[in-house]
Length: 547
Image 1: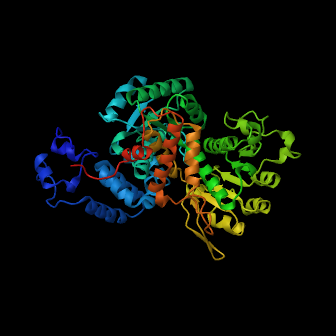
Image 2 (image 1 turned 30 degrees about the horizontal axis):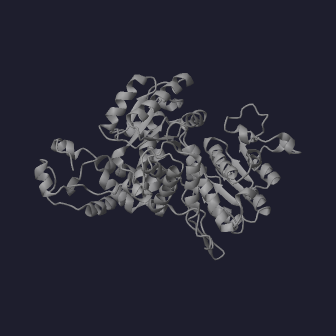
Image 3 (image 1 turned 180 degrees about the vertical axis):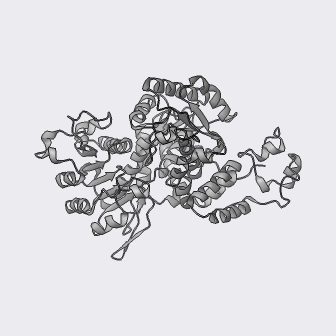
């Protein structure tokens, strides 16, 4: 039932309760809205149709995103009903890549906080009250928190990065039906090292460089503990933290709370799902693959770690599994005698004694020529790095090469899907980080899977919440990847290695079921769950107006 202790204007300005022109005549009289709305009462379906026409009338994607954000700020139900009808079309507008432009100009265009919580990392005394005010009496199931130090493709944007938390939660609701009244976006302002922001008189964040690690980790610890205390069933999602902090935070809390880092784990899950989908097509085995990562940052190492764990789970020893991996970063192929390796790079570094020409393995071309990879994943943000010579060299030693240029937006992608299909004469199994139209080549239509984390993380979160799971484990993550990788229609010529984003809601339910079942199998559920299907269904919100 709708709250009746709000004034008429408070009701119209509450995005969780506002129905706009869909308030019935009875409701208008009951809540003091007579005369405050046009007289015609619209249905939700009529509102959606009208809103979509307005959306189409915007002149470009940035303007379309601004229109949707304005609608989101006024009426959550209408926004998500519209989103549900146009998931594939809206995804790149609501989130990546269009969101990058809004992040860069967030302070300039700021109008309202969109129910987000802003935390100053130099003021830990504010955490408790800020979270309470942000929740405003609501039970919170998911917090997406960012410090915006490592936003994929654009880097450090300080407080402007709050848009990442807001946008990520939009996808949770649109894809998996997470109740928008039970989510909370949070940005931690730890400063910024982007001088243009520090010099910008319109910037709304704190005006100092990023704080020292002792202060930083102390604040994060207080935040995590307070969030988990206030919201005991919380699923905590870390997003776009910097390379030096992301893995440390995930490792610190992964055995205590149900926490998730999409940059480390989400990209790894969706890439593993793509590899499993490709193997369904070829009939090959994971344990026979040679894996090359180009761009060994947070995402690149996270993907390698996930595929490595899958190999261990399939029977290889840790040493045997690591022998399948080759990581390239700015230094070239990573070797264990390098002094600047990160904690996540070090386990995959090779020994120079393995190669007769180790000192020459400083380029992607040289490494591909040397090791003959069967899987090549790009997370480098180096446009065009997968050149024709590199790709042809790979294809010369592999019947069905798996090539995944995952960097985005478009201008940062390592290769175009069309080129990869043509350079390998249709043999490449391709997944990209950006949407790609089917490629017509020699009479076959090649569907290109998008390695979009949204295919995984909404269902993963829903599964954890539905199971009331105490933790998110590696085996739960593995089940998520297998549930998605198994959907591929391997019999179709030109089949994609991943399912299409257009069926996002359907696949999110599949992932949630697999994750929830595994959580229960491991005894992680905090309450008795006799019917997993019902548990997932009961935690799935549908955009409709309540009486």
